[in-house]
Image (cartoon, rainbow, N blue to C red; front, side, top):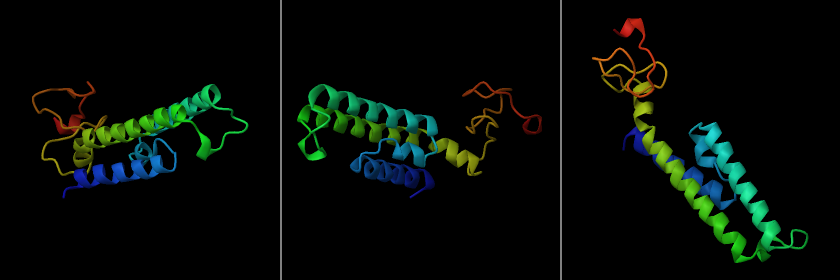
Length: 134
């Protein structure tokens, strides 16, 4: 099992564990995707608060008495959070291997992805190449 596959599996496990205790964005935080982690956490928390206010009495409702109208959408959002963490981890696998020097081609100093030796810029982020790599 390579580093990329291991990273994807650990990301999914962390995301599922975070979702099990109600913390969205845990998998993204493991990947150090702070913006996405904060966005998922805020979105799920906000949706939970709005749904609780709309479909349950916030003063008397406990976690065990939440209606299905609240639990269903929140559970769906937590599953989508885990799917997104899996997507981000599997997509960024080439960046991880390039930054560790496992790729034979040079990597972009801006985004870390593989560079095309025939181009004078990065085809992924359009950033310039370093002079030492030309």
